[in-house]
Structure formats: structure tokens, C-alpha cells
Image (cartoon, rainbow, N blue to C red; front, top):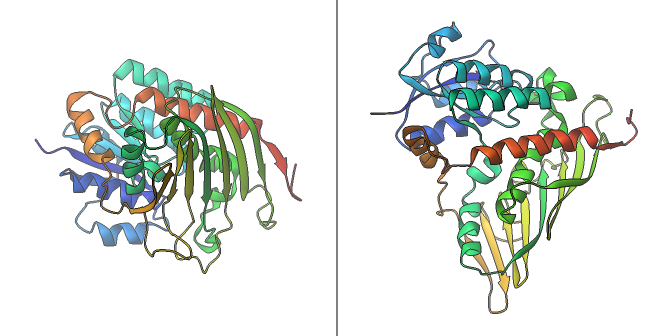
Length: 339
């Protein structure tokens, strides 16, 4: 039987990739609900012209043929909609961050235990990046030995004119570590094989956006798990001349070499995306990972059918969110707009 899904909220452009990923593995996009018509709405309708809009969210929640809902509403609304969906027997895939507070996370964890529903945050910087798929393979082959350090950067283009009001308010979007930082925490745990980590240092700041004094355009943090250490730098400073929204890079250091992922661009090198570099005792080469695939969506479909956790362990998702909320809460604030 074809898996049917619906969308609740279209407030972030990530809904495009979330929906297309499920369509590409044979699922049916049944309907969507949105309280408003936010900036991504026009692009959504253009991409998915045949998907009907419903005015009453209950029509989706009470439709037993819909097994999965995708949630891309403003971050402050995601926990509430997740709880509603799971209470109505739906599995959930959300844009990050999946929630904003420890209290919300506790409610979500309790609802998962009560309903046995899947609550999957789409960490797109891993799940939708073929370079990660290839890097997983290289690591499994032991090409760089034992992982000891990860250095990750997550720059983004601000596109100020496109942003909604909630984007500029920390309590509504989660802060730079609680929002973008979920990607980097996810990757640290994934590539290190750690079950959890300690946030040993965290900083946030408004360094160049004085017109939005509550906004955080810069953040950094250090993570530690046993012998594996990590450093993360996040910002909203991608220049307009860059060929993509951000030069996202991840360097995985091992005892016998290193792997670098240049996910979205290779400045001064090859065009396109998904560049992987491997350096060890016998090899120094670049791989084109564009055809390596992104198995998350197929695995999530299988998990929904078989009640398994092959796409991403549930406890991993909860731990990422807990650490991101913790990092945001403990961060030192810097910059001229510091409070």
C-alpha cells in the first residue's frame, strides 16, 4: 500500500526537500494545511501544484489513511503540532529545530512513549547530502582509523528581505545554536559514534545585525565525548557572490588520516556540490559524491511500515535536541548588542 503523507505548515523552505524526498521514494502527498501563506508558499504551490490545501487541520489529523505528517511551521509551533499529530496516530517528520525548550522536549518524549509514534527531525545537512553517504562508507572501511575530532562550519546567507518576523526573535526560532546547531550536534554524534556529549563551551552574538538586536548572527561551541572532541562555528555572513547559500564544511580527523566534506561548494576548485577529500597514509584524493544517494527517506518509509529505527535512532534525535537546547541556554553572549 502506498504511504500517504500531509504537511502542516509551510513557513520554512525546507518543506520542499522534505516533501520531494518522500515523493521520490514512492509516497503520495495527500494534502497540506497552513494557517497563512508565508514566503515559501508560492514556491511550494509551483513545485506541488496538484496537492490540495485543506482549511481545517482536523481533516488531516482524523484521516486514518495519512500515516505521516511533515511539519515546517514556525519553530515555536512545532512541539504543539507534533503532539497533536502523534495523539492522532501519525508519525512525524519535522524541520529543525524540532522544539525549543526542555519542557517541550519532555512532553514529546512522553508522547513517543505513550503512542509509539516516530518523531524524526530532518537534519538535512546530513540526511539530504550525498557527501555524507560517501563519507559514511569511507569511515566504515577504516580509511582514516579511529575518529578523534570533528570541525564543522555552518555558514548561511541572511536574505534579510525574505525573513518573517519570528526569524528575528530568539524565543521564537530557537537561537543560532538551538536552530542551526542541531545539524552540527547531529553530525558530531553520528560520525563519532557517541550516544551523547558534553557542551564544554558555547558563545552566541549579534556582530553585524544591529537592526535586529535580539537576533544571533554568530555562534560557536565545543563538544566532547570521551576521546572525541569537536568544534562548531555558525554564522549568517555568507556573501552574495558565493555560488550557494553557505560553504558548509566538515573535517573528520582520524588517527590515520582525515576526510573533509565540502558539501555545497568548493571555492577555487571543482564546480557543483558534494565534494569529499580523503587524505591518509597512501591516498590524497577528491571524490565526486553527487551520485552517492540519500537513504534517509527510503529508510524512514521502511521504519513507518515496519516500526523500526533505521533512518535515525529515536534516542539520537532526542539527544540532539536536548544538547542544542542546553548549548543555547548556557551560551555566553558577545557583540555590541549583548544583553
